[in-house]
Length: 478
Image (tube, rainbow, N blue to C red; front, side, top):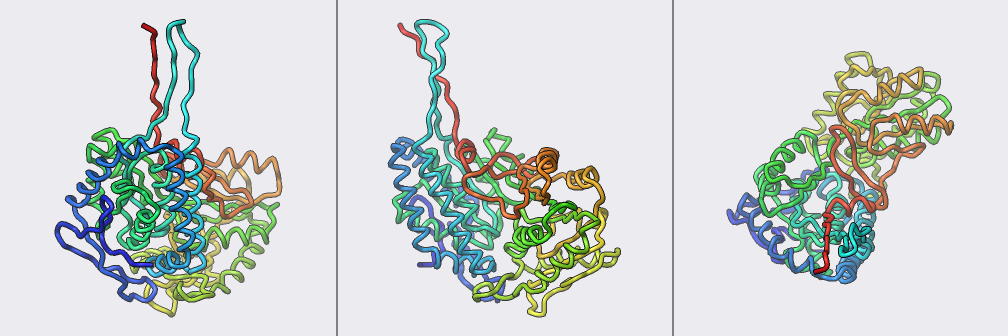
C-alpha cells in the first residue's frame, strides 16, 4: 500500500498552501516515518468549499448506488487489512493484533451503513383535512466535519464518516496530528472505491486549533463530530454555537469497573484485562477506577496481578507483543505522576509501578491496591496501563462512588445476581454499561456518553440518525 503524505481535497492530493510539512514518528522506536502536509486555515477552507460543491450531486445519488460504493470501500479496507494494520501500529504504537482488530472493527461501520443507506425513509401522517396530505422525508444534514483521535485512527473515521456519506452528506476529516497516515490511506481506498470527488476530504495538521476553528465555524458546515478531550470539546461547542451547528461529541471518560462479592472472579479478571489493557490503557472506555468488594478484593488483586505481570511489552510491530508504548513522553509523565502520587499516599504496588526498562514512552503494566477515592489517580482519566483498586462494602456505597464524577461514558460491573444486574445498570449514570463483559463496542449498537462525556451517539441506527434531518411536507389540493 502506498503511503500518502498530502491532503486529499476534491479528489486530488495537494500540498498546503504554505508548503509547510511536519514529521510523523514511530512512538515505539522514535524513528521517522514520513513528512506530511501541515495545513492551515486556508487549506481547511478549501476542503470545506470542496465538500460544499460536491453536496448537491452526492445527495441526489440513489441510495442503492451509495450503498454499492460504500460496500466497495468496505471490501478494499478488508483486502488491505494487513497493510493498514502495519501502518497504524507504526503511527500509534498499538500491537499488530489490536491494529488488525481495529481494521475489522472500523470496516464494520462502512458495511453497516452501506446497508442502512437503503433504509432511510420517512412516513405518511394522518390527514387533518380531506384535501390535505401530510408526510415526512429524511435528508442529510449537509456538509459535515470530523475531528478524530490518535488512539483509534481508522475506526473513529469510519464510525463518523460512513453514516454521514450514507445519509447523503459530504465530509471533511481532520485526523490527529500523530496519526495522519492511516486517514490518508483510507482516503486513497475511498477514491479506489468510487466515492466521488469532494465527498470525502482529509486535511492534516500538526496543530488542531486553526483547522478546527474553520471546521467548527464555517457557515457551509452544518454538523461537526469530535472525539477527544472534554476541554477541547467545550471549545468546539462554543465555536459551533455561533452558526447553530448540529454536534456529536464523544469526550473524556472515567469508567468504573465494579466487582461485587457474588461475581465470577476469574471472569472479572479476564474482563478487566480486556477492558483496561487494550491499546496500553489508552482508550476512552478503558476501565479507570476499579471498585472491588472487600470480601473478594485480595483474590481479585492476586489473580489480576499474576495476569498483568505476564504481559509482553515492546514494539507493537513485533509478533507476540501485548503492550506497546504510550503515545508520547507527555503521556508517560502523566501516568508516572499519578502512580507516584498514589504510592506516596499509601497505595500498595502489586506489580509494575514505574517506567519500563525499554525507556522512551514505555510504562510497566501496573496494579495498585489500597487506593482511595481521594487520590488523584481516582479522580483523573489515567490513559495508561494502570489498575487502581478501591474496596467497598455495600451496593449503595459503590454506586455513589461510581457516579461521583463529571464523566459518564462507559461503566462495567460483574455479578451473578439478576436483580442486581438490572438495578445497578439503571442506577449508573453512564451512556453504556457492560455487565459481565469488558468489551462492549460494536457497530450495531449506539456508542456515546452522558454528562461531560458528550452528546449524541455513534453506531447502529442511531449513528446514521445523527446525520439526518426530518422534513415535514404538507400538500393541499387546489
